[in-house]
Every structure is written in C-alpha cells, then in structure tokens.
Image 1 (spheres, rainbow, N blue to C red):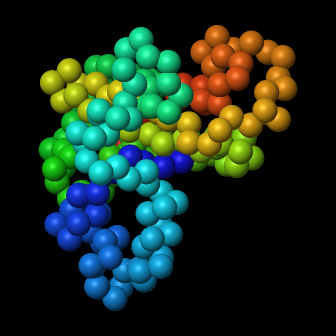
Image 2 (cartoon, helix red, strand yellow):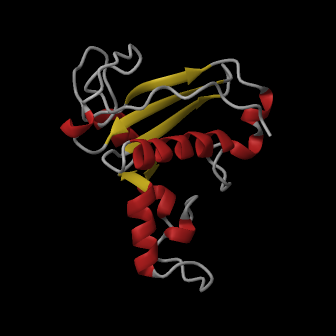
Length: 172
C-alpha cells in the first residue's frame, strides 16, 4: 500500500522534508533508509497538476493504469475537518488516511499474500464535509487469485481491488 505524494512534499520546505536527501538531522534516517522508506510507502508524482492530467481516471475511459473512485463518505463529523489536518500544514497524517492505509496494507499483504499492491489518494472537500478515496492497482492481476466461485457485485471477478471499507470509525 502506498500513499500518493508529490515531489514538493520531499523538498527541504515540504511536509515530508525529514525524508528528503538534504535533511541532515542525525536522529532521522540515513540516505539509504530514506530511499527505502520512500519507495516502500509512497507513490511519488512530479506535481498535482501532472497527477490529475496523466494519472487520474477520466469519465468514459477504460484504463487500468489510472486512479479511479473507490469510496466516498459524506456528512462526516466536524472533527474530521479540524484546521490541523489541512493539506498545506506540516502535520501528521489524518487518522482516516491511516485507517484506510492500514486496511489496504492488511488486504494486500495478508488476504492476497503480497500478490497485490495499491496506491491511494484522498480528496478532502471541506465545504461538503466529505472525503473521496481514489485507488490504483500497482501490480498486474495475479491469475492464481481468481479461483473463487462467489460473485461479489461490489468487487467483480478479475478485480483485485479490495471491497469498500466500512464507514469511517467514530472520531477519536
């Protein structure tokens, strides 16, 4: 499971500057560890504009190599939209993003035994109090996994996208 991030997030002034090659604080990671963490945890794109233009699903297009809408939650509690979670601030990840990331990581590594990997992008709408989660299958489908006979309408045969997660947990 990988979170979508942009190159500017890893610059010395970016949200994830502690993983930038230029960051020299000894208590953080070595250069090799930084590179391994970035490759294991993030799908990094040049910029938001390039991401939206080249990697985002366009209506009516059949393309397995673009992010598509996975789930939308509307009318979320006010606490989900606290100022400390706005994207331009240098803060810890939103708890809901950690929840979804953990859920996807478990699905990819335990349910599908590591034969799957997903990238996920969150679009927060503060005005409508909603979040839309977009997902992308990073590994080609493994034909060995298509052996179940049950038909699941929300997760059609041949798809390696996990079933939609349950509604968000109560905010802690």
